[in-house]
Length: 113
Length: 115
Image (cartoon, rainbow over all chains, first blue to last red):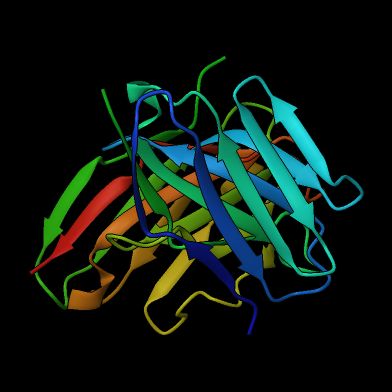
């Protein structure tokens, strides 16, 4: 069935360094790829998303890249700060559906001061 | 604007008991989702409503789980009877439109512990 693989499961960086999280998806019909941030004990919140007709999107310190041929997309966080510490989930839309998302298992990012 | 509301926030029950969760989406949002999030995993879709109709319930364990969305607004998710493996956070989310590109807004979740 459809699947989204996310790596790494944990990531620790020093404040100011960059962090990269990678995801691969299996459904070639997926056309929407959001990223959610979930702080401990809180609800997931959308931080950035990308559609299949775009290869890259940037919002301040956060960027997402998409390679449809290889079926993978990545989240890049530059100049990390302690408040970036959280679990990050990638997701891919299920082909043929209306808003269905398949989530990865998450990456726990720790930013050390 | 007010966010997605859920209740209760926590629930502890014994296996084979029944439990119900309630969700109130953001006003005007046509689409409502219920997700199950097991510890250490990403949210898994259980059911998706568009207004008061079911769009996708392919991953809902229908022998024990049921959900309804009366009048296209509030929704309830029920588990009867509960099993140990149902221990998880149940998240409700809503989105404004009906296409796949609309941002989903999540509620705070209900943490269910089945003993």
